[in-house]
Image 1 (cartoon, one colour):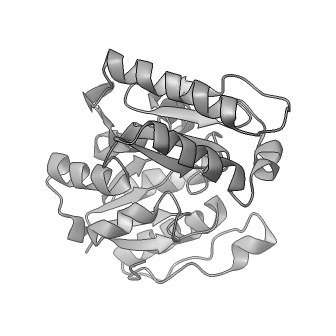
Image 2 (cartoon, rainbow, N blue to C red):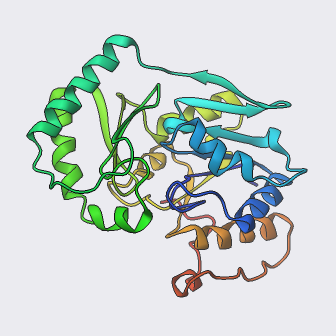
Length: 272
């Protein structure tokens, strides 16, 4: 029996930077009545608080939820209130070098002039994140900006040349994340195992980007059992199935939000 279910956030539990739906929040609360849960993603704590923490219904077993912003380089737990347990932050010299590298890489890039919504480069303490259309870009514009990842791949290569000792990864649909080398979801899940005392073998990971090159793919290096989903609609089906299985009863069919949601989820024991 699994003791903890870990989730990616954007594209898995919620649409990009959107709050959990009421149905998803209720399902997460029901899951927490049975096992612990974790959310690990590239966003910073304010995003996690807005998307997840503030959406949980009254009576949720919050102490069983492990919130891990900036790809697990931070951890928040609830004990009367949400508290930061640790944060692996950059030093001043590292910040200066990263910002200088972004200036040079963007100056060399051939990105077209287009509308930008909000800041393009965000210092998240333990991670810098570049958002191609800005932090506040609408979902429709983000989906169209770099569907084949070619824009970000070129920028990623230049940043990696300028910052050879750091990790440069594609994230979401328009973003690039810069962290210390070795920081990815494998690192975050290993840290979660140490902090929680729950071994990886007793965890399950659910994400929408477990495919080769996806930002969830590093989770597979830990040997964790994993389920690939396409969107939050499929995640709802997976959570409902997990709850039903752990209760020893047949799952009730989830209510699909679109035609694509009607595809059955992956095998709960499938390791991706």
